[in-house]
Image (cartoon, helix red, strand yellow):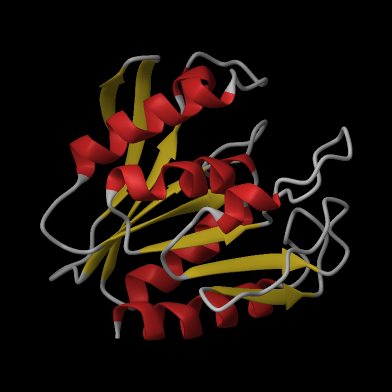
Length: 192
C-alpha cells in the first residue's frame, strides 16, 4: 500500500503487481464503500490473469474515515493526482464501482486512459436525474457491468460502450461468474 498526496489530502493506493505488466488498471470505490468490494476484487483477479497491474484507490475522504463523499470536483482532483503519480509507460485503463465509475468517466480524457471499466454505474441519481451525460462524454472503449435489478437503472450500449447485464442488484454480488466473464472478455479485446 502506498500513501499518495493529493490536493484533497492523502489517498491510499493498494497495488497488485503483475509480472511483465501489459497495462495498468486503476479502480476507485463506491461512495460509502471501500476497495474490498466483491466486484472490485473480482476485477482485480481477472485483470491480473491478463498480466494487467491493478491499483485500488481509496479516496482521501475514506482514508479519513468519512462515509459521505465530497463534491465531484474534489473527488476528480484527488483521482487525477493519484493517477498521475501511478502512471507508467503501459496503457492506462481507469474505472471503479458506482461513484468510482463516475469519477473515472469524468476524468478519463484528463488522465489519458485508453479504456474505462464501470462496475454498477449509478445511471439515475436519487433525485431522478440522469447521469448518462457522464458516460456519453467518454471517448474510449468502455464496459459497463450492470445488474439487471440495479435500482439506479441500465445504461444503453453504444458503439464505444458495451453493457454487460448480470443477474444482480447494485452490489453485483449474486452473479460473480457473470461479472468475471464480462470483464475477462472485454479486457481480452481492449488489451489484445
